[in-house]
Image 1 (cartoon, rainbow, N blue to C red):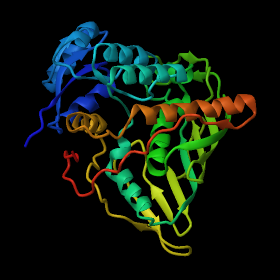
Image 2: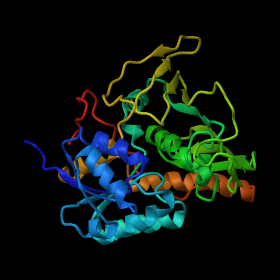
Image 3: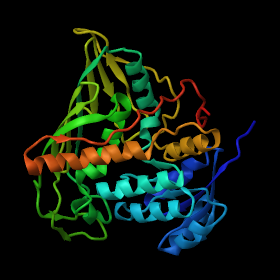
Image 4: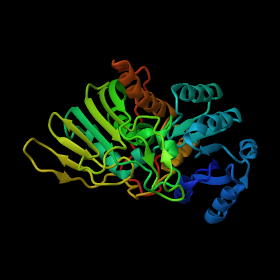
Length: 370
């Protein structure tokens, strides 16, 4: 029997909305009913391009009876205000990453949701893609034994060469950790569970920066947040991890994520995508081999998958998988690297979350377990 679609209103019709609205059509559980943006022309253009939703103001969207979930695609510093407005109006909320830019923001969102008995989901949902769920299945089956050592690397030269408005990446709330860290840390905590303790060294390595993309070519950026973060992590399961996120590396051959266990090693694909190559080395001195996917959803662009999972969970009553609690834990960890660097001490992470259930293997693309 078909499940009644969940009606979704989108706030923020910028570049990322195109990916969400394109993918949402693949999931019958989702029905986009309203689109809002500070620039009404963007909302109108999105509605016309995708043939979904009614353009309206954010205030109107929050009051609409045909919106059950607010998909919050605004810029990070607006995430809390939009999320709180949605919750205050009796609507579940699904945020783009990060959950907020401070711990206080994240806590206020979760507290409001608990008070209203509503759900909070938060990107990234790449953790639900075929590459990452296949890796999760291998770990859960003990394919490499007990995980011991983890490495994660995200390194590039920065976004000023291609992004049309890159300034915010170098201001408070930006930087490589808050920008790209959610992909890596969400994947690592989905694979291995919560993090107990972190240590970090952070620094501004290149300052100032000059924009070489249009339309702001030649504009100088004064860098106000660290553009290189080197961190160590101790997971609750005992594994020790190393993570580097950097906007100060011009090129590299570093792997995205590797997990090394008592009897083998696992290479996990880029957490900024849904698919990618999964490789395993099953014994010391053996050969790396590619592992076939155990799960669907390997398309390069599957944004809205986490939203669809939450919508399915709303109808069935089960827990959804990309939760506000995990997103808050990731935020807490990311900020902990900077706290550690400034204090010269370990940061003991007080937050935690329940590791989500793995996706059911063997489902068809566009299908989610109920």
